[in-house]
Image (tube, rainbow, N blue to C red):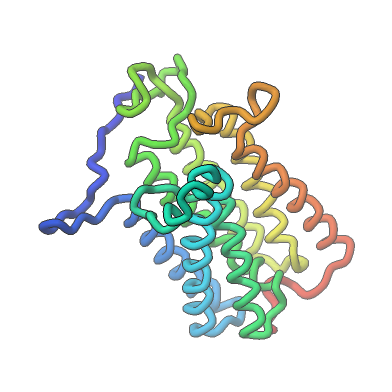
Length: 265
């Protein structure tokens, strides 16, 4: 068993003002994505103003989509009973799948403003998303939340809010797969011209697969539990359509290749 570090979730406190590590992880993710986008723009023929707007629109999509998605997918009963709970973001609750929908909506807005094809935009931003995913999962780990199932493996950890038995550090599994591995694969794949939609499709396929697999060792939300078959979770239910959509986008991209995702508009 590996001891859990027992982090203080508050990174900085000045009087009544508290800055939490989780909030800083979001900030680090956005800054990291912005820096990498600036770097990619040198060979992808994007202007700096476009990059700045792209990251700003993405941030709006993540925050609003993530919060709305969490309430719809994971806490609908509370939302219906107390609609104002949607605004109480300090109580926690963000959903990746909701954030993804929010980002896609923001990319539609961005592509229309700059007259760029929608999938050219999503192909550009897809390799940047794992940076935010990595920092987000590290934030979950620092908060000691979204832990895994009970395990007897030597790297199991006892999370303070999850009882006295060691559990899978599923947050670190996701940080590794959804963050590091996904970033490396997408970055290398997108370094060469690909058919439009291919990078977006690979992102959906890989993220959906990684998330689906990790859900087998991640404890489901207590107020939801398993949805079916004694093992199907909400995360798997939301990830399966991503796998299908990613596969279809890849097939379409190579069957009917259009402009390269790296081609200038």
